[in-house]
Length: 497
Image (cartoon, rainbow, N blue to C red; front, side, top):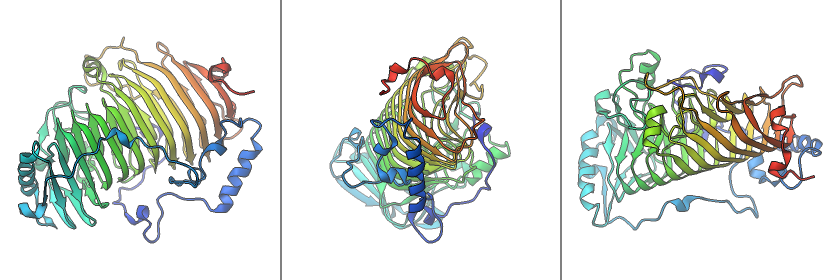
């Protein structure tokens, strides 16, 4: 299957992560926050290039906390939020603990039956006030379980849900119709650990409790090429609406971590998502064929894209025609040495439009933003806005390219060409950049209307030039100078004099 390892510099041993790195515990540090001296040097360097950075849209308009690698409220700066995509629900009528259903939180006893009994009981109240299942402090080993509507799953402080190490407790389910098969293997696929289909008004939250998929078993199957069916996600919601996922740590997913598909009005916020940095395909959040998705204030370390936007695979995605649209990603930070901070595609055959990405911080990664598609995909990627992005030690800050030429089966259509148009990127600073941007479209379907403004890429050798092919657009206030394909029609983005 398609991976990002074509832009990976080196592999990292698989290790289970210490949460203290992220939560401020002793010793470690997830994000390297520069000292005041480093910040002063940064502003001095930027000031030297003030001749090419226009005043109206300069990097100085970005909040100070964003420049320093922190995402938070700055004095006098009101944070934007898209959390109103989720419509608040009333207090649940029935509240029970997993212990009420025979759960034992010792980290060894299987609680699969307990969670299944709990969910069968909670489903009785779907139409009569809703319900809430509380997972108290402890280590609760379980296989997959299905949620119900008008329901809250609440993990108390110190609660850890552990994914079963028995593959039979991740049952086989049908492939998604917009993919036509499992993403990794032909045929059916494993269900996610926390699963839901056709749900309304669901909240998954807590006091920073943890869901640990214990995915190493699954990664080994993938590495050893003994995987029979496509791996399950940690959380997957299908055909669902008005969903809130917040205030939790999700870690060690077997495959993609959070996967809403065919959904609408989804809010994912204040999440910590962790996986070893070479755990295969452990995307953080994949918004797939979904509408009105809000992702904000998250920290992610993964072995694949931090955030990905998708909409189906080749002829299956085109036939279903379920686009991803009205997607907002704000104040996300993290690292992925194999992939990108935000990736759009390559499975985008149902279409992707109206995506806003802003206040993004990516460090020690293969790419900052990546748009990827291919011949046979069809579909479209249009009206994408990326604003206020900071990168440190990112190999390729901006990358548009074809995918890995992977297709679900031999029935894919080589005449199905994707449309990529209307990409707006502004207010970007990249420090210690390794390579210049790579913007390569498709000869038969060039990428059009690519517009860049206030882009500052530091660390590149003078001999390094932008690599552009089969694209067109415009630019202003870009350093170092972009390729000739972006030097045309500068008035398109109203660059000031």
